Length: 146
Image (cartoon, rainbow, N blue to C red; front, side, top):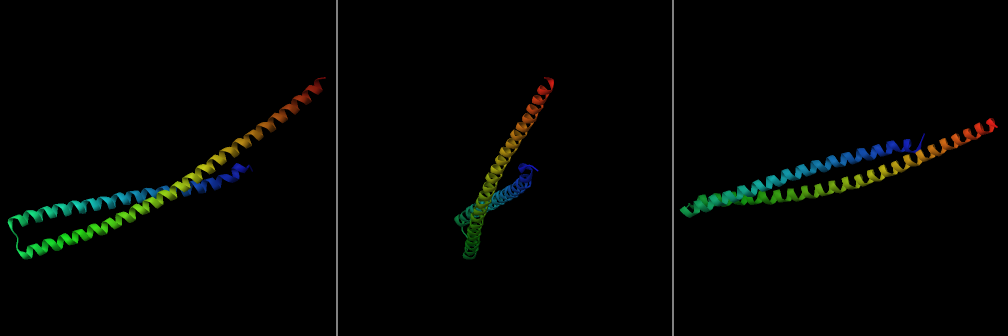
């Protein structure tokens, strides 16, 4: 069995690990984009609600309505802060998955190149062996012709 044949399962494992890391990286990117969209929606809703509050306040609202607006605005701001933290964690997670995928990708590429060199070396050895046999055969044929 050739060295390259024994190395094929190792390369296959590395390729599978890289594929898994790529999948996790893609999933974390998708989740990050979803969390960023949620944050954007919260911020837009906050801005709209503040605009409604200012519009209502300009025509006059009672103390009870003012407290309700302020309490809801505070809840929105709290939700935005929490979502900002979720986005930060999601970005960090994506960054970590990207790093893991990059490392596995580099490892797989290195192994693939090594496999290519092994195959080329084995082919050169086979070619040299065939040439040697061919030369020996030609030499024998030359002797028997004399």
